[in-house]
Image (tube, rainbow, N blue to C red; front, side):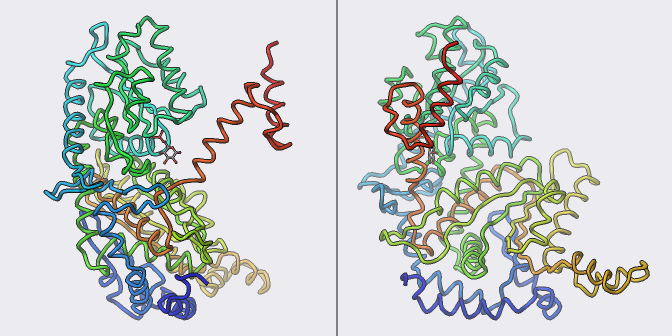
Length: 549
Ligand SMILES: O=P(O)(O)OC[C@H]1O[C@H](O)[C@H](O)[C@@H](O)[C@@H]1O
């Protein structure tokens, strides 16, 4: 038995869950007129209604007791203080230092990292201004109009999705194009749509060793040289963001054009670092800074609010409740705002790469479920497809609904319809529709009783499906920063409860190594006996199809 499942707090929660499973939220709402009033929180411009969750006062108390038993506050403070909590890589975890607007020093190996953080922000600000003003010109003297941002994983999702979410704040001076996949279709499409004399390539790779990013950058460099640029002109058209300055310089990026980051920033937590340069170029530095300020506000809330009023803590504990005591396999994110449609993909990397682990900090196998599958897409589209399974599928899928109260180019009818669908879905999930109601609806339809009962059973919606609803005034850079930091801290809290190292990603690393080995096989540079029979067969098929004719 693991330390976690032997805790008395865990056992208590198992008992409470058995009772709560027999209760229906419909009845709780009927019995307590103040339920919605009591079960809401507000922080950093985000309003959360969590009353449509399968928790009562006892369950909530039990969950907060569990958090305390797992020493949540101590571990949280250790992260902010720069302790090496990423124990398998011997690293501090300090994305919070990147948005530290207080006077607090942040020490790594005894040295304050804040001066370097500020210097890098100043470099981003100055570079953004020089590109937007036209002062930074291409080698033929033309101003930069296109940014091709190359990166993958955390060096791509954050910049792309934040830029997309804040589209109404886009500057006119430049257009940013993102490229991640090594599939050549993407980079070729992008490069064929821009003029090389007016294009700046921003290559983002923390490690400077990721196959996809290196290859896409080589292709862009080749395109630039073939179009008429020379090696000396590259300095005006290629910049890099990396913690591996040596590799970036060897690749041919001049030292002045390298924006630093550090090994204490995890890839999936890096949008706040210079990895966010494309955001600054797309939206202006003030808006990038707004994101950081919103995240800082959420950091302050997370570190100072009592656990019971702490939004990331509450969300994490509700997630643990469903994952561990209701066998919920997944968690769905449903932004009712077109520009925020990428958020599920962002949180998917954040959560699944962080807590997709089955070994505890001590290296023991867990005896409890850990990170859920994260998925979702924009509302209302999902209502006409996968919501069916959330309403009537056999499992529990907790949902996060989110809606800005005001949107740009406000069209009252559209926005009222959007809101009504969002709220209507949470209501339907919670209350469902009983067999009796469905049976009554079928009265007078000329059905015999057996057929009426059969149909009523199909139409019955069990309800009692949990959801959170987040509302914010409008999606400003600050609100978005707070929202993203809220999910970061939720993931952290769950990692603490499950006793995981949320900051490594060995599974992903293995994929990178094997990908390179198979590439050697495909290129005829590796002994086929290095591969299993299935992989040998696949390589042989690929080689045969691509053999010189
Ligand atoms: O920034 P890079 O070093 O190129 O890494 C890009 C991505 O690589 C891996 O897939 C990691 O798991 C991600 O967390 C990381 O963001």
